[in-house]
Image (cartoon, rainbow, N blue to C red; front, side, top):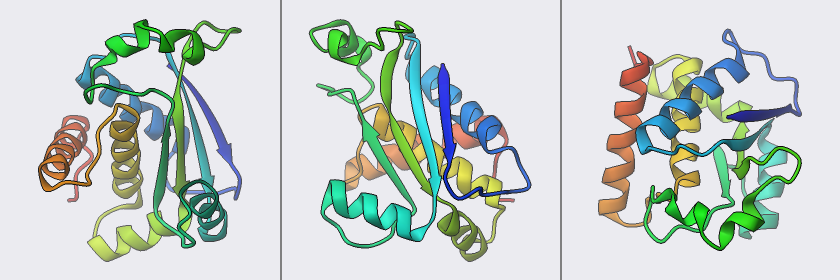
Length: 167
């Protein structure tokens, strides 16, 4: 996995942003059974930066905690066989041969606020947002109650497997 980090706001936490993001992203890919070499872009921004992106790409003019922009169109969540089909040509980075998997945008301010609100560490909140976004990049969604239950279970299992808990 290749990870591109753009820390637009020079956010600093008491953990290594790239290290935690890679750890969580790798665990999601492993758990989901993705065997392809993928590239993921991670942008760390603030309320205004994420509000602008949310407005531009989703036509929702407000800040949020995280945005996910998957490049893969799935028939079923976690069915990576679609990356071997017609999409493969469009997904391949010609320079590396890796699948351009998608982009994640994290709002630094919300990491801090939500960690405080939920009573856990900023590392745990950041890891949760990365796991959540990675599941979106794997084709999962939470628009319906049953979809949300699946995502919540997967997020919890991933973070528990990494020992990143609310405690």
